[in-house]
Length: 576
Image 1 (cartoon, one colour):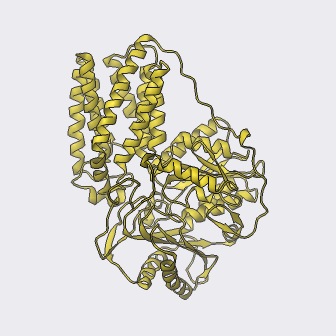
Image 2: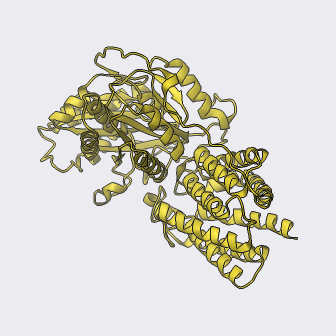
Image 3: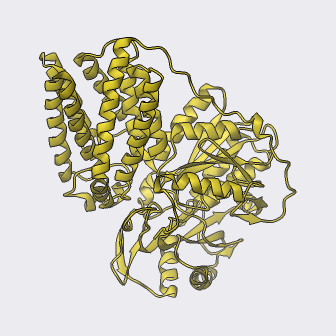
């Protein structure tokens, strides 16, 4: 378990502060993450990586000469927000464009994608390559749906080496894509990891059993078997990886590959070396020429007891880039001439926006909305464990804590907005940004989109009516479906949002006041959330373990239904 912490909510912030203090010669902190503290060649591509915290040395430990130019750091196991990604990219930009690379998780895809669009609008070229090395998370036919695990390192390393050599953005993206297509990984776990302050692990593996095909966020494995010997584990991992040789490689015999045996947090180096002994024997027997292998902690999962094996199949260009020197806090090879330090005062970091003026009617509505956010905060605090339990059945179990982080940040941002006499629209926009920024993950992104839709519709001038709220929820529904690509029946929050929005709109058209219309819409959302128990997930982290979730309602739909019922209570008090 994670034993050393102060306030669990501040764990990532305090860990980042300590990390930067310990490695000032390599990194400096910027809003949203870290960048190199040394100068890069002007006009070269900046490689920015990132994802949730809890995976050190990924991602911050991989920032430095020869590797990433910046790392965006979300909360524990939660993707960073689009604002965080944007901030780090702006600070890391060398003038040659930005290459974004990260594991293929829905929240990361959404947030990094949003940041890319913003950078391009501002004239900064930007490309994205997602890492999809985990063979257990989807079939070869669905390779683009696979998640990224320890293979992150091979993809990041080769892309960064290409940038260091002066490749154009297009060429860095080509190399990054090629490295990803030639990287395959598989992992196992003997027990789950524990978040700081949590009473128990995100999941457990039965005594004497091993989970096969786990994810680095604590997603349960796809199967279980008896714990093997070290040699038997090596044989299992190697055999599965050799069953899927990447396209373009005729056979293993005579091929070149680098090998990564990765510890996930609690497996000791000596244990890894025992396993690698047999891995090396098996790969040599298969006729593979092993190039600069790595054994150790490369991408962890807090204190998870587990390991993963990665094969990175090389050609001449990829081998040269893999061998190139690196000097970062957690990964070093070869020799590099130290670069000069940067001038932190000249970093391009966006300023906070001023609060625009608002009408008296909108300011009054802002107070009511702030009260609703406070009520939601109390609701989530009371149900955080139950929401986590629902999510752990087929996901990674962090929905409850993610929602808690989001609503705490949103409520605090709203309180600050009221002090500055913000209108309803501005208060909602600031709450949305804070929610997405602090919660991270797919859920954080979705709630950010929803609350922003409300803010855009209500604005800072008109007195909100029932029609305004109906219009706002319709926009929220459309924006969420467009943003997350979820549709009815995918077993997501959308399955409760669609009937809620439709019922609210219809009841307002029928002449109901807001309290009555909202109450009926909340009933529809609750019924729809309960009905998701009969569905199986079609998208997101729960999809690989779809059958495990049958019989359990979707946590996102459940939390939405709970929230709209709580807001209904606030509306009744004010309308009455």
